[in-house]
Image (cartoon, rainbow, N blue to C red; front, side, top):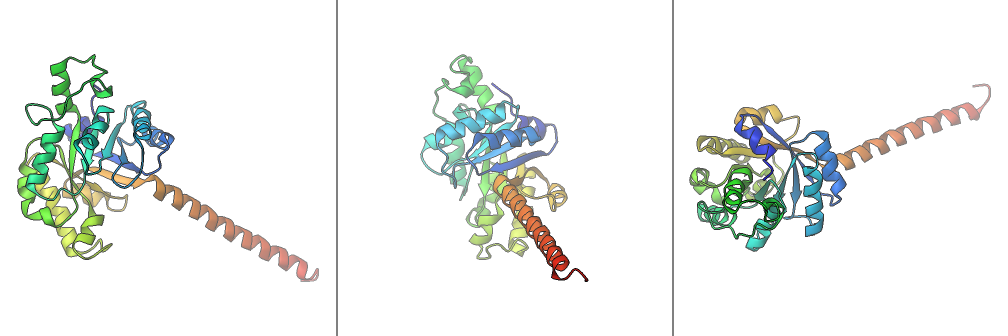
Amino acid sequence: MRRSRVLEKLRAGETASCFKVNLSDPKISEIVAMSGFDCVWLDQEHIGQDWSELNAGIWAAKAHDKDVMVRIPRGSYSDYIRPLEMDAAGILVPHIMSLEDARKVVNMVRFHPVGRRPLDGGNADGAYATLDFNEYLEQANQQRFVVLQIEDPEPLDDLEAIAALEGYDMLFFGPGDFSQGIGAPGQWDHPKLIETRKKVAEMANKYGKYAATVGSPDNLDELVEMGYKFINMGADVIGLSSYCRNLVKRFETGAENKTGEKKKRTDSPYK
């Protein structure tokens, strides 16, 4: 089984980078992988990618030896395990609401002796049934990461118990939905949000998990100092829209200047 680049870096004490892809064309995933990010984040919670598009995105990243993390929808068990069987390096499970919820997820996505993940082995992650049965179970548990997303106030009472739970790798703080959950949508400097971001990192590190979240170049150093080791640094739609707006602004400014110069020259030959 292909080893996880993200887990390799995290286990070596390094920080892993990630980039979110909203657009469905697998060329985007390939560009991100070629650019040097450790992980490509593909999303099925909010984005209507079909399975073939998701599969192509995983292939594109793997071609450059980069991981893919898929945020799954909270649906049937098949929604949890299909990305893993396509050989995604990890899954991100949104809106973990309690310790019991976290336990059910671990049981569903880990093989024996950790859980009861439904077993096939005939897909990409099992080398299409060519990987030894017991090696497949062992390697899948060791080389595929499971991320639990804390993005609501409800699980905070269970946060330490969730952090202590065995069988998963990362706790991911999601500030967007959390800000909404505390009645302060978009208030990134809200005291409760800041406190919880720190608390998630503290609990993750205390119990041997890796702290994960979203960030930017502006707060990267602060997040690393808090103890975050897996950080998503941007998204394709943000980069593309920002690039286009900047080009349009420069074009319009340049065109206006040229138009003004032309009028000035033709108003009168004596001016």
